[in-house]
Length: 193
Image 1 (tube, rainbow, N blue to C red):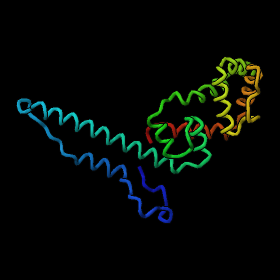
Image 2: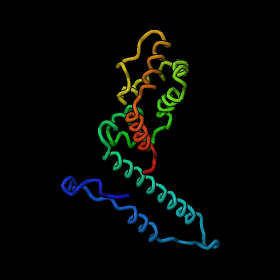
Image 3: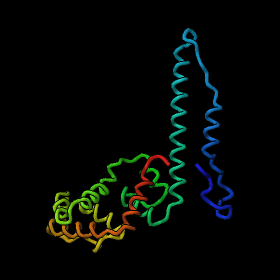
Image 4: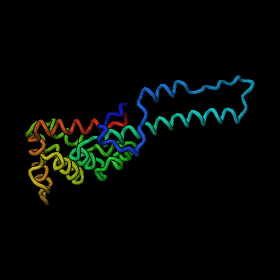
């Protein structure tokens, strides 16, 4: 993990620097390991060893969370907006970090629905879209609006087939730049950096 996210002019002098990945690895390798003989082990020593392992695991989790936050602070506003749409949270790096690291991957179901429509034949795509629940149609449409690929701000009301047809046309008309942007943003949803 690199700390070169900001130039020195942009860095806030009051914020402590995070250690690099090599410094963290070096610190973990230098940690003292206590080995206990079987006959010397008592219940409290065993509990202490287990809690030490849990503390090490917790430290690694905190490192991942902070690394994800740092990664998201360097993302442009449009991509943060798209991530916020996917997770249903404000497009703020802190909120998105919490959503990504503690949230469910079910939040990304709209992407799977969009891909299913996109992979279908243009004549079958409206049927694939019509098979989605109305709430799913709205979620896929919101994703298209965030990608700039929706022909209207709102789905046509009333008939599901009309809305599904419009949605399918919009998905199949999605440009390469929008698809690349979606792939880039999906890379940010990984819990590792």
